[in-house]
Image (cartoon, rainbow, N blue to C red; front, side):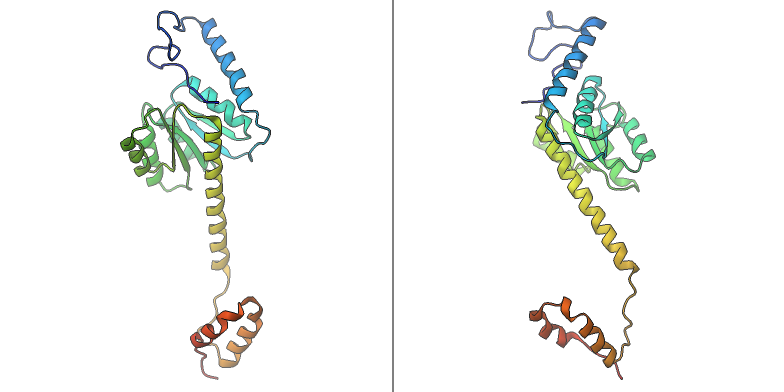
Length: 230
């Protein structure tokens, strides 16, 4: 099933239909549209499993698009933060350091999607995994988005599973980065071995850690050990 964002922002008409018959001209029509979108997203987002409650920023100037993405992401278990333009998105990222995933529309007032990516990358903040959305699939624009700091690029219209798969990739990368930083911190807290250990101390150290060393590496390691004087 394709996730079609089905209204033209400029004309307010349903995509692929005659503008004289399908303009959204009343509050009742708009309400009916939003109810229909709610039901549609409820159906396509009901996949059985949910993600951990990670915060996701959604930046899009279209209320309809924000509503659709909000319903999808909440249905998948994400904590969604909504922004209507690039400047509002940047303010959220600066005030909430635990927002580590961002879905950013390419064309927004204020900071555009690519400009927001560039600003995020030049700032001093925790790494944010950015998925850039665009209706433009030209190679040059995609390359430009990546050059300015986007981690992934998704062209509209897209299928819900495509977005969900990309979010899961982002979560795996963020988890791996977290584990790497924690490992580095643990290593930094461990006392380093003195450089002037005596020969007997070196032998004790080697024997005590021999069970952790593969046997085929011992000959090479022996040639590298330079014990100090007794």
